[in-house]
Image (cartoon, rainbow, N blue to C red; front, side):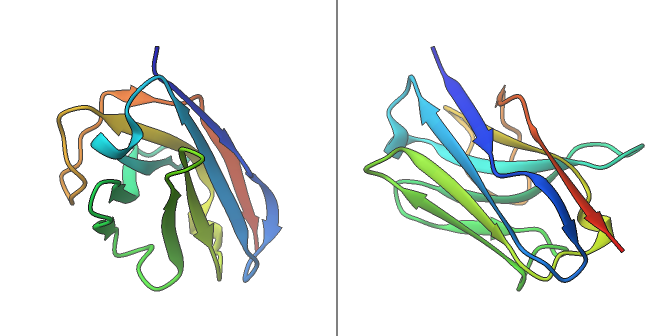
Length: 123
């Protein structure tokens, strides 16, 4: 059974940093793409960043480029999202996601989702 367990969310002031982690299990980690989606209040879920574990290629949404860094620890089957220079518009529930077929790209459309972790950035 695929499991994605997020941690690291919280409340932070604008300009601060948070590090989200996703512990993955139940599948061959290096064969998948894993990413982070965000759902802001009143908005649809959107991809923030993702990584193809096998070759390390990554994608960042324009809103995340230059501020967020996604990384994987293959030995621990974890993916982290380091978020710096946070803005109030980064507020939302962040979901760790994966898919057996789809690859990380702008059009990433994963089918497996974690429970989510809340990130709140105050102004």
